[in-house]
Image (cartoon, rainbow, N blue to C red):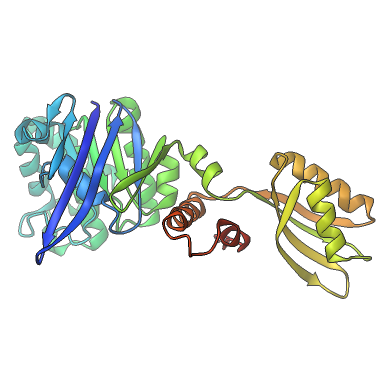
Length: 348
């Protein structure tokens, strides 16, 4: 099912002060798309998700899910599954068992009891919660409550899934299982998914499209690969030996012969003339730049110990994009060149 968001705004009134959470947001999500919603804290992600699930109403604008307005809340709730990243499981009934909680919510979704039991047992088995099916929610760990919340959203086999930090509190193995299951729902059942998460690995692995929101406005909408190419810098990392070394001459060679700029440089081993450099392509492709750097160092009598391209992660790209976007709003801040000349911290 498709999602149509048209000129959506939401203004909250807090102690007499108006706070704009969403500012004229328009977005179309096609049936069967897996879309990631990225943004810093307070950007409007959760507000947008809550409007889509009819938990709050917009100040202006409208949303249609499969042609049905969110103002028709009963119909919308019957086709949407949702998870909000709350580690305490506050939306579950603490004095009911895991199984009874899931069965109760399945009944509300109109699923026959026999079918609901099959689905619940299957999902409990998938997430290794079979031995906890009769345990009270109040006795569960944080991660287990998070799993029950995700299972609850999946039992009705919804046509649309709205997931706000769905794996918050999951361990590494459970997170991988959740990703596998969400992809299966998306591919096998054509479920339309809108995922909000600060887990960049999860976003990169699952989504085919990224929507970046900041200060209540959409500022980027494209596939993850294009986003990474446009937001953060690709560079070449090279460790080399060169006995007769002069930095200025080396810098000029890199600039004029390799069509690139040195963004980071240090002496690895002064006694043995070993250096490390991070070089940003500015004229040629990444592969062409690597070839030219290699030839330059070898021709000047040097030796290369390591040379490799650095492809930015989604996390690096996200932080770089926000830095550039904030720079546009405040020209007194550092220039883009200054931002990019600082080496990114490599992830372990």
